[in-house]
Length: 147
Image (tube, rainbow, N blue to C red; front, side, top):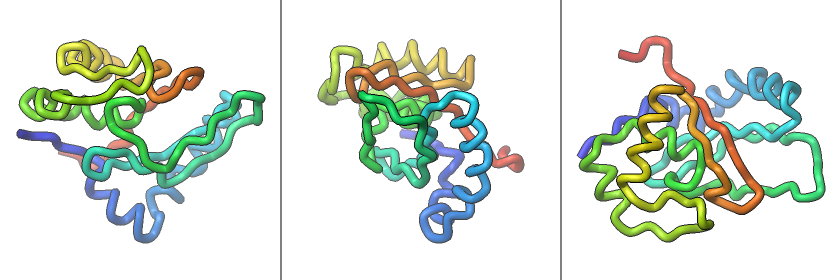
């Protein structure tokens, strides 16, 4: 099973001294200014996404506060990480997942369709898969020295 994650090298440093968070925070603020939406920086830890920084968007009546940890399969950030995994790992991972909403992707074949879209576009979308009324768009951050 192979599941290579490009931010693994950053994860330890981001949790210990927050360098990654400080580096990307100006970009997160710019995205918030452009969209008015909350912007999250997440890293992978095992089978979960840990939110290490949030720039809150404009307040609105139905605003949701996300927990700082969420499963990979039902978040935009998590699906980015899963899109880097090989089929053997994905078959194992998607073998028994509970649906959080009727839109939650819980099976391997459906995720494979989304994986192709994520790889081709570089964007991962959570379409009310974690919580009704909440949709997220996620893009990866790569190390410039990546092989």
